[in-house]
Length: 575
Image 1 (tube, rainbow, N blue to C red):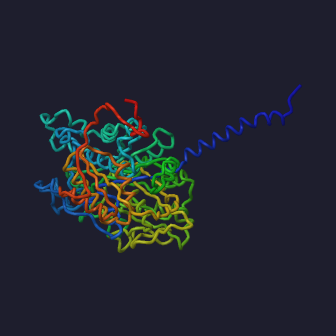
Image 2: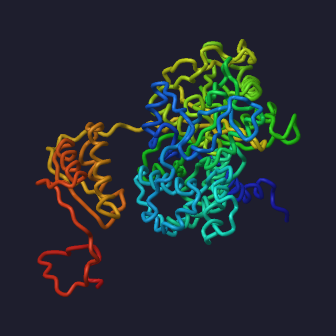
Image 3: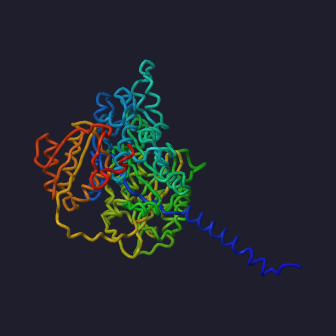
Protein backbone atom coordinates (compact mmCIF):
# COMPACT_ATOMS: atom_id res chain seq x y z
CA UNK A 1 0.00 0.00 0.00
CA UNK A 2 1.56 3.33 -1.07
CA UNK A 3 2.07 6.25 1.32
CA UNK A 4 0.15 9.43 0.39
CA UNK A 5 2.36 12.25 -0.92
CA UNK A 6 1.22 14.51 1.92
CA UNK A 7 2.51 11.98 4.45
CA UNK A 8 5.85 11.71 2.67
CA UNK A 9 6.15 15.50 2.61
CA UNK A 10 5.35 15.70 6.31
CA UNK A 11 7.98 13.06 7.05
CA UNK A 12 10.54 15.01 5.06
CA UNK A 13 9.81 18.38 6.71
CA UNK A 14 12.23 17.96 9.66
CA UNK A 15 15.10 17.22 7.26
CA UNK A 16 14.12 20.17 5.06
CA UNK A 17 14.01 22.51 8.05
CA UNK A 18 17.40 21.25 9.19
CA UNK A 19 18.88 21.91 5.75
CA UNK A 20 17.33 25.38 5.70
CA UNK A 21 18.81 26.15 9.10
CA UNK A 22 22.23 24.93 7.99
CA UNK A 23 22.02 27.08 4.86
CA UNK A 24 20.99 30.12 6.92
CA UNK A 25 23.83 29.48 9.40
CA UNK A 26 26.37 29.21 6.58
CA UNK A 27 25.11 32.42 5.01
CA UNK A 28 25.25 34.23 8.35
CA UNK A 29 28.80 32.96 8.88
CA UNK A 30 29.85 34.03 5.39
CA UNK A 31 28.58 37.58 5.91
CA UNK A 32 29.20 38.02 9.65
CA UNK A 33 30.35 41.56 10.47
CA UNK A 34 33.93 41.83 11.71
CA UNK A 35 34.74 44.23 14.53
CA UNK A 36 37.75 46.51 14.63
CA UNK A 37 38.63 46.48 18.34
CA UNK A 38 41.98 48.26 18.28
CA UNK A 39 44.44 50.14 16.07
CA UNK A 40 48.10 51.18 16.17
CA UNK A 41 50.27 53.08 13.73
CA UNK A 42 53.60 54.67 12.87
CA UNK A 43 53.32 57.57 10.42
CA UNK A 44 55.38 60.48 9.09
CA UNK A 45 55.72 63.57 11.21
CA UNK A 46 56.51 61.64 14.37
CA UNK A 47 52.97 60.24 14.59
CA UNK A 48 52.96 57.19 16.85
CA UNK A 49 49.30 56.79 17.85
CA UNK A 50 45.87 56.97 16.20
CA UNK A 51 45.15 60.01 18.41
CA UNK A 52 48.13 61.85 16.95
CA UNK A 53 47.00 60.83 13.45
CA UNK A 54 43.57 62.31 14.08
CA UNK A 55 45.15 65.52 15.36
CA UNK A 56 46.96 65.81 12.03
CA UNK A 57 43.83 65.04 9.99
CA UNK A 58 41.49 67.29 11.96
CA UNK A 59 43.71 70.35 11.66
CA UNK A 60 44.56 69.72 8.02
CA UNK A 61 48.20 69.03 8.83
CA UNK A 62 50.91 68.17 6.31
CA UNK A 63 53.42 65.57 7.55
CA UNK A 64 55.63 65.60 4.45
CA UNK A 65 59.18 66.78 5.04
CA UNK A 66 62.78 66.60 3.88
CA UNK A 67 64.72 63.47 2.98
CA UNK A 68 65.81 61.36 6.00
CA UNK A 69 69.21 61.63 7.64
CA UNK A 70 69.97 58.02 6.72
CA UNK A 71 70.24 59.14 3.08
CA UNK A 72 72.64 61.99 3.80
CA UNK A 73 75.87 61.83 1.89
CA UNK A 74 74.32 60.09 -1.13
CA UNK A 75 74.02 63.27 -3.20
CA UNK A 76 70.53 62.12 -4.15
CA UNK A 77 68.79 65.33 -5.19
CA UNK A 78 69.03 66.79 -8.67
CA UNK A 79 66.23 68.98 -10.09
CA UNK A 80 66.94 67.62 -13.55
CA UNK A 81 64.50 64.73 -14.22
CA UNK A 82 67.00 63.31 -16.72
CA UNK A 83 69.83 63.00 -14.18
CA UNK A 84 70.78 59.34 -13.83
CA UNK A 85 70.80 57.85 -10.32
CA UNK A 86 69.16 60.94 -8.83
CA UNK A 87 65.77 62.09 -7.56
CA UNK A 88 64.18 65.35 -8.61
CA UNK A 89 62.04 65.25 -5.44
CA UNK A 90 63.68 66.02 -2.12
CA UNK A 91 60.70 65.67 0.19
CA UNK A 92 58.49 62.80 1.27
CA UNK A 93 56.75 61.26 4.26
CA UNK A 94 59.35 59.56 6.46
CA UNK A 95 59.28 57.78 9.80
CA UNK A 96 61.46 59.11 12.57
CA UNK A 97 64.00 57.03 14.49
CA UNK A 98 63.61 53.77 12.58
CA UNK A 99 66.90 52.69 14.17
CA UNK A 100 65.40 52.85 17.67
CA UNK A 101 64.27 49.39 18.77
CA UNK A 102 64.13 47.67 22.16
CA UNK A 103 65.40 44.28 21.01
CA UNK A 104 65.63 42.88 24.53
CA UNK A 105 61.93 43.54 25.06
CA UNK A 106 61.14 40.96 22.36
CA UNK A 107 63.90 38.56 23.37
CA UNK A 108 66.07 39.42 20.36
CA UNK A 109 69.85 39.78 20.60
CA UNK A 110 71.44 43.07 19.50
CA UNK A 111 73.32 41.24 16.75
CA UNK A 112 70.14 39.75 15.29
CA UNK A 113 68.28 43.04 15.62
CA UNK A 114 70.96 44.80 13.58
CA UNK A 115 70.35 42.38 10.71
CA UNK A 116 66.55 42.77 10.89
CA UNK A 117 64.77 45.01 8.42
CA UNK A 118 63.23 47.93 10.36
CA UNK A 119 59.90 46.79 8.92
CA UNK A 120 60.09 43.65 11.06
CA UNK A 121 60.91 45.69 14.13
CA UNK A 122 58.03 48.10 13.56
CA UNK A 123 55.38 45.41 13.11
CA UNK A 124 56.48 43.82 16.39
CA UNK A 125 56.01 47.15 18.17
CA UNK A 126 52.67 47.99 16.56
CA UNK A 127 51.30 44.48 17.08
CA UNK A 128 52.11 44.67 20.81
CA UNK A 129 50.64 48.18 21.09
CA UNK A 130 47.48 47.27 19.18
CA UNK A 131 46.83 44.30 21.45
CA UNK A 132 47.36 46.31 24.62
CA UNK A 133 45.11 49.08 23.28
CA UNK A 134 42.44 46.37 22.88
CA UNK A 135 42.88 45.44 26.54
CA UNK A 136 44.55 42.16 25.62
CA UNK A 137 47.75 41.16 27.41
CA UNK A 138 49.87 39.69 24.58
CA UNK A 139 51.10 36.87 26.81
CA UNK A 140 47.56 35.52 27.16
CA UNK A 141 47.50 34.71 23.42
CA UNK A 142 50.29 32.15 23.64
CA UNK A 143 49.28 28.99 21.72
CA UNK A 144 46.01 30.63 20.63
CA UNK A 145 44.52 30.47 17.13
CA UNK A 146 45.36 34.11 16.46
CA UNK A 147 46.14 34.98 12.85
CA UNK A 148 48.64 37.50 11.50
CA UNK A 149 48.08 39.02 8.03
CA UNK A 150 50.59 41.66 6.98
CA UNK A 151 51.25 43.54 3.76
CA UNK A 152 54.69 44.46 2.46
CA UNK A 153 56.45 45.43 -0.74
CA UNK A 154 59.59 43.50 0.06
CA UNK A 155 62.79 44.66 1.69
CA UNK A 156 65.69 46.77 0.52
CA UNK A 157 67.46 46.72 3.89
CA UNK A 158 69.87 43.98 2.84
CA UNK A 159 70.93 46.15 -0.11
CA UNK A 160 72.82 48.28 2.43
CA UNK A 161 75.42 45.51 2.64
CA UNK A 162 75.94 45.80 -1.14
CA UNK A 163 75.49 42.03 -1.16
CA UNK A 164 78.79 41.61 0.65
CA UNK A 165 79.06 37.86 1.31
CA UNK A 166 81.25 38.54 4.33
CA UNK A 167 78.36 40.46 5.90
CA UNK A 168 76.12 37.39 6.02
CA UNK A 169 75.95 36.53 9.72
CA UNK A 170 73.19 33.93 9.86
CA UNK A 171 70.52 36.54 10.60
CA UNK A 172 70.39 38.49 7.33
CA UNK A 173 68.20 35.99 5.48
CA UNK A 174 65.49 35.76 8.15
CA UNK A 175 65.88 39.44 8.96
CA UNK A 176 64.94 40.44 5.42
CA UNK A 177 62.58 37.67 4.26
CA UNK A 178 59.05 38.86 3.54
CA UNK A 179 57.61 35.62 4.94
CA UNK A 180 59.23 36.33 8.30
CA UNK A 181 57.45 39.69 8.58
CA UNK A 182 54.29 37.92 9.75
CA UNK A 183 56.07 34.82 11.04
CA UNK A 184 58.19 36.79 13.49
CA UNK A 185 55.10 38.36 15.07
CA UNK A 186 53.56 34.90 15.51
CA UNK A 187 56.84 33.55 16.91
CA UNK A 188 57.35 36.43 19.35
CA UNK A 189 53.82 36.15 20.73
CA UNK A 190 53.39 32.37 20.45
CA UNK A 191 50.46 32.65 18.03
CA UNK A 192 49.34 29.47 16.26
CA UNK A 193 46.81 30.79 13.75
CA UNK A 194 47.72 31.50 10.12
CA UNK A 195 50.70 33.82 9.52
CA UNK A 196 50.53 35.26 6.01
CA UNK A 197 52.61 37.95 4.36
CA UNK A 198 51.00 39.59 1.33
CA UNK A 199 52.75 41.48 -1.48
CA UNK A 200 50.39 42.97 -4.05
CA UNK A 201 52.32 46.26 -4.08
CA UNK A 202 50.29 49.29 -2.95
CA UNK A 203 47.18 47.23 -2.13
CA UNK A 204 49.07 44.78 0.12
CA UNK A 205 47.66 45.76 3.51
CA UNK A 206 44.06 46.01 2.31
CA UNK A 207 44.36 42.58 0.68
CA UNK A 208 45.83 41.32 3.98
CA UNK A 209 42.81 42.77 5.78
CA UNK A 210 40.48 41.01 3.31
CA UNK A 211 42.20 37.69 4.00
CA UNK A 212 41.98 38.23 7.76
CA UNK A 213 38.24 38.94 7.51
CA UNK A 214 37.76 35.76 5.47
CA UNK A 215 39.77 33.69 7.97
CA UNK A 216 37.71 34.98 10.89
CA UNK A 217 34.49 34.11 9.11
CA UNK A 218 35.65 30.58 8.28
CA UNK A 219 36.88 30.07 11.86
CA UNK A 220 40.52 29.61 10.87
CA UNK A 221 41.26 32.03 13.69
CA UNK A 222 39.36 33.70 16.49
CA UNK A 223 41.41 36.89 16.58
CA UNK A 224 43.48 38.49 13.84
CA UNK A 225 46.19 41.11 13.51
CA UNK A 226 46.02 42.74 10.08
CA UNK A 227 47.98 45.59 8.55
CA UNK A 228 51.05 46.54 6.61
CA UNK A 229 54.36 48.39 6.69
CA UNK A 230 56.77 50.19 4.39
CA UNK A 231 60.20 51.56 5.26
CA UNK A 232 62.53 52.75 2.51
CA UNK A 233 65.99 51.86 3.73
CA UNK A 234 67.45 53.05 0.42
CA UNK A 235 66.27 55.75 -2.01
CA UNK A 236 65.78 53.28 -4.86
CA UNK A 237 62.02 53.96 -5.09
CA UNK A 238 62.67 57.69 -5.46
CA UNK A 239 65.30 57.13 -8.13
CA UNK A 240 63.19 54.60 -10.04
CA UNK A 241 60.14 56.86 -10.19
CA UNK A 242 62.28 59.81 -11.16
CA UNK A 243 63.24 57.81 -14.25
CA UNK A 244 59.53 57.25 -14.91
CA UNK A 245 58.86 60.96 -14.27
CA UNK A 246 56.08 59.83 -11.94
CA UNK A 247 57.18 61.71 -8.82
CA UNK A 248 55.57 64.83 -7.45
CA UNK A 249 58.38 67.38 -7.48
CA UNK A 250 57.47 68.70 -4.03
CA UNK A 251 56.86 65.21 -2.58
CA UNK A 252 53.12 65.68 -2.02
CA UNK A 253 50.13 63.71 -3.28
CA UNK A 254 47.59 66.23 -4.58
CA UNK A 255 44.70 63.82 -4.71
CA UNK A 256 42.04 64.67 -7.33
CA UNK A 257 43.46 68.18 -7.63
CA UNK A 258 44.08 70.36 -10.66
CA UNK A 259 47.63 70.66 -9.31
CA UNK A 260 48.22 66.87 -9.29
CA UNK A 261 51.69 66.20 -10.67
CA UNK A 262 52.71 62.74 -9.48
CA UNK A 263 53.01 60.53 -6.45
CA UNK A 264 54.66 61.58 -3.19
CA UNK A 265 56.25 58.57 -1.53
CA UNK A 266 55.99 57.90 2.19
CA UNK A 267 56.69 55.32 4.86
CA UNK A 268 54.31 54.04 7.49
CA UNK A 269 52.75 51.17 9.37
CA UNK A 270 49.16 50.41 10.31
CA UNK A 271 47.95 47.57 12.53
CA UNK A 272 44.36 46.51 13.28
CA UNK A 273 43.00 43.98 15.77
CA UNK A 274 39.95 42.17 14.41
CA UNK A 275 37.34 39.86 15.94
CA UNK A 276 33.98 38.55 14.87
CA UNK A 277 31.42 41.12 16.03
CA UNK A 278 29.47 38.53 18.01
CA UNK A 279 32.66 37.53 19.87
CA UNK A 280 33.62 41.16 20.54
CA UNK A 281 30.18 41.91 22.00
CA UNK A 282 30.29 38.71 24.06
CA UNK A 283 33.72 39.62 25.46
CA UNK A 284 32.75 43.21 26.25
CA UNK A 285 35.29 44.69 23.82
CA UNK A 286 35.10 48.29 22.76
CA UNK A 287 34.10 48.10 19.08
CA UNK A 288 35.59 50.99 17.09
CA UNK A 289 33.93 50.14 13.77
CA UNK A 290 32.65 47.19 11.78
CA UNK A 291 33.86 45.69 8.50
CA UNK A 292 30.76 44.74 6.55
CA UNK A 293 32.30 43.46 3.33
CA UNK A 294 35.43 43.35 1.22
CA UNK A 295 36.61 42.20 -2.19
CA UNK A 296 39.81 41.68 -4.17
CA UNK A 297 40.31 41.34 -7.93
CA UNK A 298 42.88 41.83 -10.69
CA UNK A 299 43.19 44.04 -13.75
CA UNK A 300 44.24 41.15 -15.96
CA UNK A 301 45.37 42.16 -19.43
CA UNK A 302 44.82 45.91 -19.69
CA UNK A 303 46.45 49.07 -21.06
CA UNK A 304 49.73 48.11 -19.42
CA UNK A 305 51.17 46.09 -16.56
CA UNK A 306 51.19 49.02 -14.14
CA UNK A 307 48.37 51.12 -15.65
CA UNK A 308 45.13 51.36 -13.62
CA UNK A 309 42.05 49.67 -15.04
CA UNK A 310 38.74 51.51 -14.54
CA UNK A 311 36.36 48.59 -15.22
CA UNK A 312 38.28 46.37 -12.77
CA UNK A 313 38.04 49.09 -10.12
CA UNK A 314 34.30 49.29 -10.70
CA UNK A 315 33.96 45.55 -10.27
CA UNK A 316 35.92 45.35 -7.03
CA UNK A 317 33.76 48.10 -5.47
CA UNK A 318 30.57 46.39 -6.68
CA UNK A 319 31.80 43.04 -5.33
CA UNK A 320 32.54 44.55 -1.91
CA UNK A 321 29.07 46.11 -1.79
CA UNK A 322 27.52 42.78 -2.75
CA UNK A 323 29.54 41.00 -0.06
CA UNK A 324 28.26 43.56 2.46
CA UNK A 325 24.66 43.14 1.21
CA UNK A 326 24.50 46.90 0.57
CA UNK A 327 23.69 49.23 -2.31
CA UNK A 328 25.77 52.16 -3.59
CA UNK A 329 23.34 54.61 -1.94
CA UNK A 330 24.18 53.13 1.49
CA UNK A 331 27.72 54.57 1.30
CA UNK A 332 28.48 58.13 2.45
CA UNK A 333 32.15 58.53 1.61
CA UNK A 334 35.17 56.94 -0.03
CA UNK A 335 38.70 56.97 1.34
CA UNK A 336 40.25 56.76 -2.09
CA UNK A 337 43.51 55.42 -3.43
CA UNK A 338 44.10 58.97 -4.69
CA UNK A 339 47.83 58.97 -5.45
CA UNK A 340 47.73 62.37 -7.16
CA UNK A 341 48.72 61.25 -10.66
CA UNK A 342 47.15 62.73 -13.77
CA UNK A 343 46.41 59.22 -15.05
CA UNK A 344 45.29 57.35 -11.94
CA UNK A 345 43.00 59.88 -10.25
CA UNK A 346 40.66 60.48 -13.22
CA UNK A 347 40.38 56.72 -13.81
CA UNK A 348 39.55 56.09 -10.16
CA UNK A 349 37.00 58.93 -10.00
CA UNK A 350 35.43 57.72 -13.24
CA UNK A 351 35.06 54.19 -11.88
CA UNK A 352 33.44 55.50 -8.69
CA UNK A 353 31.07 57.67 -10.73
CA UNK A 354 29.96 54.62 -12.71
CA UNK A 355 29.14 52.72 -9.51
CA UNK A 356 27.66 55.48 -7.36
CA UNK A 357 26.53 58.17 -9.78
CA UNK A 358 23.45 56.70 -11.49
CA UNK A 359 21.27 56.52 -8.35
CA UNK A 360 22.85 59.29 -6.30
CA UNK A 361 20.57 62.04 -5.03
CA UNK A 362 21.87 65.51 -5.76
CA UNK A 363 21.61 66.53 -2.10
CA UNK A 364 23.51 63.45 -0.92
CA UNK A 365 26.80 63.27 -2.85
CA UNK A 366 29.47 60.65 -2.27
CA UNK A 367 32.28 62.47 -0.47
CA UNK A 368 35.74 61.73 -1.79
CA UNK A 369 39.05 62.15 0.03
CA UNK A 370 42.47 60.63 0.66
CA UNK A 371 44.88 60.74 3.60
CA UNK A 372 47.74 60.53 1.09
CA UNK A 373 47.35 64.30 0.82
CA UNK A 374 48.42 64.53 4.49
CA UNK A 375 51.21 61.98 4.74
CA UNK A 376 52.07 60.81 1.21
CA UNK A 377 51.64 57.35 -0.29
CA UNK A 378 52.76 54.83 2.34
CA UNK A 379 52.77 52.05 -0.26
CA UNK A 380 52.16 48.62 1.32
CA UNK A 381 50.74 50.27 4.46
CA UNK A 382 48.44 52.68 2.60
CA UNK A 383 45.28 50.56 2.73
CA UNK A 384 45.49 49.90 6.47
CA UNK A 385 46.18 53.60 7.10
CA UNK A 386 43.11 54.46 5.05
CA UNK A 387 41.02 52.15 7.23
CA UNK A 388 42.44 53.74 10.39
CA UNK A 389 41.55 57.19 9.06
CA UNK A 390 38.00 56.05 8.27
CA UNK A 391 37.51 54.54 11.73
CA UNK A 392 38.78 57.76 13.32
CA UNK A 393 36.38 59.82 11.16
CA UNK A 394 33.47 57.66 12.36
CA UNK A 395 34.56 58.07 15.98
CA UNK A 396 34.99 61.84 15.72
CA UNK A 397 31.93 62.32 13.47
CA UNK A 398 33.88 64.35 10.93
CA UNK A 399 35.10 63.75 7.38
CA UNK A 400 38.51 65.48 7.21
CA UNK A 401 39.43 67.72 4.32
CA UNK A 402 41.74 66.62 1.52
CA UNK A 403 44.75 68.90 1.18
CA UNK A 404 46.14 70.59 -1.94
CA UNK A 405 42.73 70.44 -3.65
CA UNK A 406 41.66 74.07 -3.86
CA UNK A 407 40.72 73.40 -7.46
CA UNK A 408 39.38 69.94 -8.39
CA UNK A 409 40.99 68.15 -11.32
CA UNK A 410 39.65 69.33 -14.70
CA UNK A 411 40.30 65.81 -16.03
CA UNK A 412 37.38 64.48 -13.95
CA UNK A 413 33.75 64.92 -15.00
CA UNK A 414 32.44 66.12 -11.65
CA UNK A 415 29.11 67.33 -12.98
CA UNK A 416 26.51 64.58 -12.65
CA UNK A 417 29.06 62.13 -11.23
CA UNK A 418 27.50 61.96 -7.77
CA UNK A 419 30.97 62.72 -6.33
CA UNK A 420 32.09 65.68 -4.24
CA UNK A 421 35.72 66.29 -3.29
CA UNK A 422 36.29 66.97 0.41
CA UNK A 423 37.86 70.39 0.00
CA UNK A 424 36.71 71.22 3.53
CA UNK A 425 35.97 69.07 6.56
CA UNK A 426 32.31 68.05 6.90
CA UNK A 427 30.24 66.84 9.84
CA UNK A 428 29.46 63.11 9.78
CA UNK A 429 27.16 62.75 12.76
CA UNK A 430 25.60 59.52 13.99
CA UNK A 431 21.85 59.55 13.40
CA UNK A 432 19.02 57.49 11.97
CA UNK A 433 21.04 56.65 8.85
CA UNK A 434 23.85 54.17 9.49
CA UNK A 435 27.15 55.75 8.48
CA UNK A 436 29.30 53.75 6.08
CA UNK A 437 32.35 54.38 3.94
CA UNK A 438 34.43 52.50 1.42
CA UNK A 439 38.23 52.27 1.40
CA UNK A 440 40.05 51.58 -1.88
CA UNK A 441 43.58 50.43 -2.56
CA UNK A 442 44.94 49.59 -6.00
CA UNK A 443 48.27 47.87 -6.49
CA UNK A 444 50.95 48.55 -9.06
CA UNK A 445 50.74 44.79 -9.63
CA UNK A 446 47.16 45.15 -10.89
CA UNK A 447 45.58 43.73 -7.74
CA UNK A 448 42.72 45.86 -6.40
CA UNK A 449 40.97 45.82 -3.03
CA UNK A 450 37.96 47.55 -1.52
CA UNK A 451 36.56 47.37 2.02
CA UNK A 452 33.23 48.64 3.37
CA UNK A 453 33.42 50.12 6.90
CA UNK A 454 30.36 50.77 9.08
CA UNK A 455 29.93 52.65 12.33
CA UNK A 456 30.06 50.61 15.52
CA UNK A 457 26.74 49.46 16.98
CA UNK A 458 25.33 52.01 19.38
CA UNK A 459 25.89 51.23 23.05
CA UNK A 460 24.22 52.79 26.05
CA UNK A 461 26.48 55.11 27.97
CA UNK A 462 27.44 53.76 31.37
CA UNK A 463 25.81 55.57 34.26
CA UNK A 464 28.43 57.33 36.34
CA UNK A 465 28.49 56.03 39.90
CA UNK A 466 28.16 58.35 42.86
CA UNK A 467 30.66 56.36 44.92
CA UNK A 468 33.21 58.42 46.87
CA UNK A 469 36.66 58.79 45.35
CA UNK A 470 38.69 56.22 47.26
CA UNK A 471 42.42 55.74 46.65
CA UNK A 472 43.25 53.09 44.05
CA UNK A 473 46.63 51.66 43.05
CA UNK A 474 47.87 52.57 39.57
CA UNK A 475 50.58 50.07 38.62
CA UNK A 476 53.21 50.35 35.89
CA UNK A 477 56.13 48.15 34.94
CA UNK A 478 59.04 47.69 32.53
CA UNK A 479 61.73 45.21 31.70
CA UNK A 480 64.31 47.55 33.28
CA UNK A 481 64.33 50.52 35.62
CA UNK A 482 64.86 52.86 32.66
CA UNK A 483 61.89 51.32 30.83
CA UNK A 484 59.79 51.63 34.00
CA UNK A 485 60.57 55.33 34.30
CA UNK A 486 59.75 55.94 30.65
CA UNK A 487 56.47 54.08 31.00
CA UNK A 488 55.56 56.05 34.11
CA UNK A 489 56.24 59.25 32.20
CA UNK A 490 53.96 58.14 29.35
CA UNK A 491 51.13 57.36 31.78
CA UNK A 492 51.60 60.74 33.46
CA UNK A 493 51.47 62.55 30.12
CA UNK A 494 48.32 60.67 29.14
CA UNK A 495 46.56 61.40 32.43
CA UNK A 496 47.32 65.10 32.15
CA UNK A 497 45.23 65.37 28.98
CA UNK A 498 42.62 62.73 29.88
CA UNK A 499 41.67 63.73 33.41
CA UNK A 500 37.99 63.14 32.52
CA UNK A 501 38.58 59.36 32.52
CA UNK A 502 37.61 57.81 35.89
CA UNK A 503 40.77 56.88 37.76
CA UNK A 504 39.30 53.51 38.72
CA UNK A 505 39.10 52.67 34.98
CA UNK A 506 42.74 53.66 34.54
CA UNK A 507 43.74 51.51 37.53
CA UNK A 508 41.73 48.56 36.21
CA UNK A 509 43.38 48.78 32.79
CA UNK A 510 46.84 49.03 34.33
CA UNK A 511 46.26 46.07 36.64
CA UNK A 512 44.34 43.69 34.41
CA UNK A 513 45.08 44.61 30.81
CA UNK A 514 48.81 45.32 30.76
CA UNK A 515 51.74 42.92 30.99
CA UNK A 516 53.55 43.07 34.33
CA UNK A 517 57.33 43.05 33.92
CA UNK A 518 59.94 42.66 36.64
CA UNK A 519 60.64 46.34 37.32
CA UNK A 520 57.45 47.60 38.94
CA UNK A 521 55.93 50.62 40.60
CA UNK A 522 52.57 51.59 42.06
CA UNK A 523 50.98 54.90 42.95
CA UNK A 524 48.12 55.07 45.47
CA UNK A 525 45.91 57.93 44.32
CA UNK A 526 42.37 59.22 44.74
CA UNK A 527 42.36 61.54 41.73
CA UNK A 528 44.03 61.87 38.30
CA UNK A 529 46.10 64.77 39.62
CA UNK A 530 47.46 62.67 42.49
CA UNK A 531 48.21 59.79 40.12
CA UNK A 532 49.97 62.12 37.69
CA UNK A 533 52.15 63.57 40.44
CA UNK A 534 53.17 60.12 41.67
CA UNK A 535 53.88 58.81 38.17
CA UNK A 536 55.88 61.93 37.35
CA UNK A 537 58.03 61.36 40.44
CA UNK A 538 58.69 57.75 39.37
CA UNK A 539 59.61 58.94 35.87
CA UNK A 540 62.11 61.38 37.34
CA UNK A 541 63.52 58.87 39.83
CA UNK A 542 62.31 60.94 42.78
CA UNK A 543 60.74 59.60 46.00
CA UNK A 544 57.02 60.16 46.54
CA UNK A 545 54.99 59.40 49.64
CA UNK A 546 52.26 57.64 47.65
CA UNK A 547 54.57 55.72 45.30
CA UNK A 548 56.52 52.51 45.72
CA UNK A 549 58.99 50.83 43.36
CA UNK A 550 60.64 47.44 43.36
CA UNK A 551 61.69 44.37 41.45
CA UNK A 552 59.55 41.25 41.28
CA UNK A 553 61.21 38.05 42.45
CA UNK A 554 60.15 34.43 41.94
CA UNK A 555 57.94 33.31 44.80
CA UNK A 556 59.40 30.53 46.91
CA UNK A 557 57.54 27.39 47.89
CA UNK A 558 55.08 27.60 50.77
CA UNK A 559 56.10 25.97 54.05
CA UNK A 560 53.35 26.84 56.51
CA UNK A 561 50.23 28.98 56.16
CA UNK A 562 47.81 29.84 58.96
CA UNK A 563 44.70 30.73 56.96
CA UNK A 564 42.34 31.76 59.71
CA UNK A 565 38.91 31.96 58.06
CA UNK A 566 39.53 31.26 54.40
CA UNK A 567 41.90 30.79 51.51
CA UNK A 568 44.58 33.37 50.83
CA UNK A 569 44.99 32.84 47.07
CA UNK A 570 43.43 31.02 44.14
CA UNK A 571 44.54 27.38 44.02
CA UNK A 572 45.72 27.38 47.60
CA UNK A 573 46.59 23.87 48.77
CA UNK A 574 47.75 22.65 45.36
CA UNK A 575 51.38 22.98 46.42
